Image (cartoon, rainbow, N blue to C red; front, top):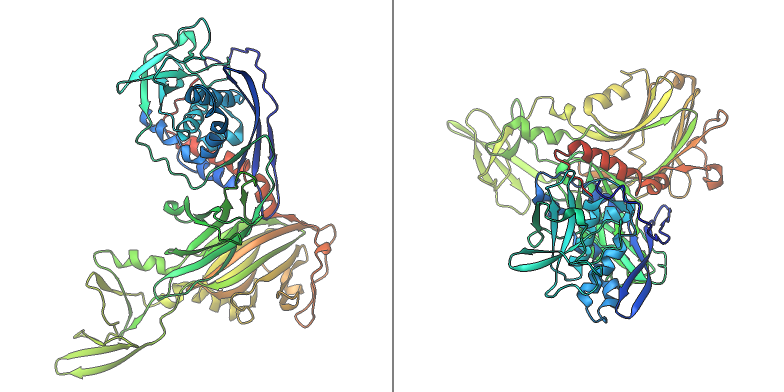
Length: 631
């Protein structure tokens, strides 16, 4: 905006963005030459900043909507950039005017970034993109300064079009190092004097400097002392030496399951091992917007390991990534992302004469409460194309406990029918229902009510996990779905002649990783399921009947109280038509060299800090109702 035409010669020392792309570790490392002045001359320091992509993705997915000036304060996140402030202060704290020289050093850092009009960004986003306008650069500078203990405000110049933004820095004295021959500019707010800090890279601005065109322009002050400044993680930084690469692993396993709780244990380790390392676990639920940006934190033990019991309450697809901040020696890192398909929680069903019943929350319509019990019918869909081989790994875990010890008996008394329900270890309770016999649980809370289930409830609940390869006019797709009783019956009894069916649920053992490999071509689909030893345990042969099949369905497990964890999707183009894979009577040890792959997990990692950022930006541009972009 105002400064975009001021092409003042500035020495922008090399800025490098290095992305380490591996399936289990990745971090964006930003290397900057941060030059700032002291009264003793010029000190040259090189600042290295490591930003795990998961942290940038977290902020990119947050709302970027600005309704009024006070919303700009929400973007100031000092906790996320605290290590940068600490690195700079390790030098400036020994100077004559440490607060002012620290603020000038922060300005020297943001002045190296490219000027790009992109509106409000969170500081982590600006670090990764290495660019911003006056708004984004001011938000980054204010965050670092506030992390270093300075009292700062935002100054929004609204008397010009387009507007402009600066940072105001409180100093109890007139700045020493502002541009010679110019009068420093100040704003008085809350009985304190704040000196202007220009963050755009048009000049070598110092605290107290202000572009002359802004003199006497109407402005508003945005205080920063009442904002929520929490952050899921921090960037790591160090001076004068590159980071040592690090990595973090992630695993999912069954928790100590208790009744009425769905949970899994998330665990792993960082390398090099480091005690007390901050680990953030990001959980994204693709079906629930309220859980789309959830995270949990834990720390590593003496061996670098971490563990967290994750409880969830809704069925759906979850993407889970573990990340650690890094430290003064090692860069931060992200784990691979595990995709978790979670089924509904088990229910206790009570049989009546004509209908079945469950208990639900009093005051809510039965259809509202019954709907979640049906489960999610489509967890994932990925286009595959044709003439390809596809491979992935999966594991089935129990995430809850089905109540199976309900016993009941009925006693008929004059004029009424009573049902006594006994549950092991619990005192029986008598429930009265004059018109029919209804089995009920004991000790039912008073805020629950009896809900009548549809007569076909057992047919409509989506309780069978399945992997489905669908032929869409010659182009295949992979779907993870839940089938209801009617659909399973239709397939198994031959009701759908265009569906090839494999029931692998009897052969799939919980807590064991399996590998699925299929070839998809004009001849149809041929697929094998391998156990951890590389032995074929189930297969689908490529017969003539398959050529006409529109779907290939493989049942995996019961959907209730279970989750299926999915990872390492690999898609490989086939140069020539392939023969069917080994039958289930053979033993096949899968050689990695046979499958020169383009791994989706690697591609996702490679684009994590770029593609998803752009997608998030497009999303927030649609959401933004007011965009005040300045500079």
